[in-house]
Length: 411
Image 1 (tube, rainbow, N blue to C red):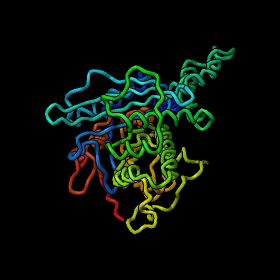
Image 2 (cartoon, helix red, strand yellow):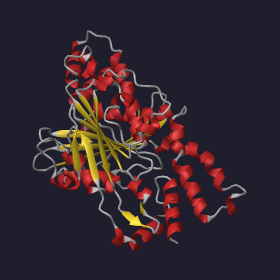
Image 3 (spheres, helix red, strand yellow):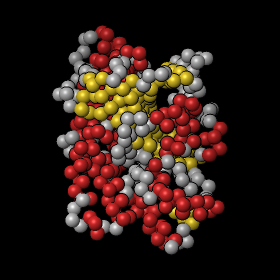
């Protein structure tokens, strides 16, 4: 029986990021509760800032989901936890809701915007929840016949559920690398535009609208506010590709506009952070062309570099968070930043390897449920603490200090 339980766990994972077989698996785990092993955490990093930046009055956070079906509001439980850890004790009554379209009038996703505040200090944080599932769901309906065709009645109940969830989740990546991938990138570009060009009070509500993002507007918006990105699996790839498109527009801007040049200088002093949950960049980079500037980080990012005044940011801090038992999550090599990010971003990689679910004994060895390993990132209190508190020499959150081994990277 234990052997079959192990197989059930693995098949459950293959079904994608879903709740398939959750009751069966949870029951099995409950029976093994006494055999939990201590979950580990190792951080390889030079340090990074968190959401709780004492010197800043406000911050904007874009939250982007990964594969599978998501509806607007999917991120609110996680967003609520982050806001509470940041000391926010009030929330704006209205959630701003925008149905995003591109310049051709095509639907490219939903954007829900939530603002949280601290009543005593006046600090605020605005979360932008991007939902792009509406682009891929109509396309995936082409697979519906697979569950209704003549042979479907002969498929076992477990396999039928597996097939349904695989059809719901795995095609998203295939679609992204096809013609409709441009709509998914436009979903992020539209989210950037609304986030960078408007304060919360200025945002429209309950509208279907296009936001015109130009290089000049992107520079002005990015240089004015403080931004953090939190992305999941495929959402990381979409976000980075959208940032790359903006970078290319900025690179080709004609010189001479003093206002734009001043904003660019401010932008070049900015540190942008992207927390990538269930990081899949090594997998999703396979077979893709390299960024515009590759292997030139020192030229762009060192004060003595020949392209130092052409960099885009002071620093793009990439925090890749992976569970070693998540079979579709990958660590990033510390010196591989130029493989995935334009050198002009001045990217620096941090790797966080953290187990999000305990190992259990199934008779033939230890196993951590790979489904939970892929879906529990947002429920892990240490990950929440790390995002909020950050990691700096001389300061580390007590919970992280107790839980994690930090290997400090130095040049």
